[in-house]
Length: 121
Image (tube, rainbow, N blue to C red; front, top):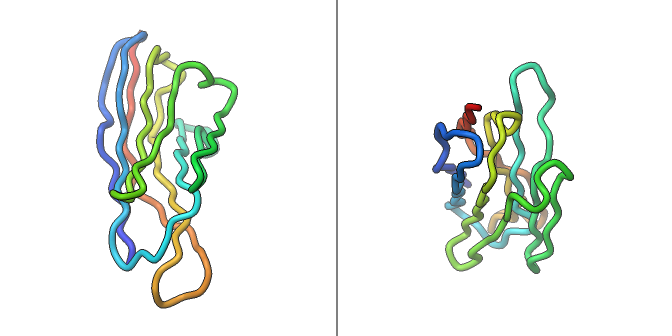
């Protein structure tokens, strides 16, 4: 019913930048929060950045001042601009959207397949 597709990952040197995009499509009535998570090898998945439908944002402390989350509600798309990348940012980045579809009166989570970000020193 809902598809979530990420793009924009890749390999960069420390100090470089990448922009991740995530588009949700399908039988979408409305989208609440849109979030970016990441999971590094051997570590738990962590919430990196979140944005509400009203545009309020939150970040994990380790990326504050370097990453910026934004969304385009008309396109059901969320972005993550990542500047000043560090080797410790290396991880698979997952998009998570909280969606209400037309056939259900409640919200549920949908996840993308993940996109790899690799930062070399």
